[in-house]
Image (cartoon, rainbow, N blue to C red; front, side, top):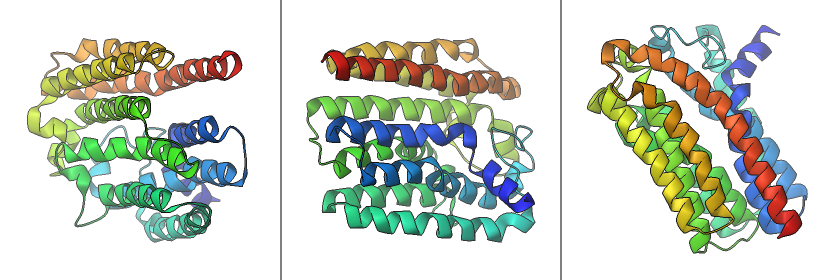
Length: 287
């Protein structure tokens, strides 16, 4: 049971919905119903995908995680060394069957999107690649983790990548970059001590917060250009920008205090998700 508990914590249950929801909604809106591909994809992006994304990270970030005071809870597991090999095997065992099934159910385009998605998950933390230590590429890759399931859902369902789709996906991508960048602020001290580079360690705490605010606002603007009803969702980007304003001029010595904003971000996701769901239900019901 200790192994199961360790794997569960490493997969970040609080964040499961952040990857499963984009896929499930994108596929459902295009396909118009639930089928085998929807079920397999939703389950995959709910648990195995997150175990891969966070489990690989916990294994190869162990040394720096020891210096990070926020590790060891819902925000990130401090994975004991004795679970490292088991975690990597669990990632393979839980991911491969789903990937084989999704490839069998998909098309050439969906294969490419799925390959990019899985590569981004591995490249972020795995040795040699370590995109998480490459400033700016770290935020780009992290955003890909959450946007690619939506792109994959659209591709798997045979949807059209029209102007509206690109604006919505682009806004989602900017939101993801903003969220990762702000999340990096709280870890500046631990990352510096661990010799890990990030967007925040390169440009500094306050500039990173300012960039995050601008990216959130830009996400809302992009959705505004998408026209109604997508434009209405653009308003939901504003609470994120407002919620991190208290750290607009944060000093690096006080950067760990941004964790309060990050915790607020985690719960804000659930509120935003509920409002987006209501909006989608209204669109589907009333047109």
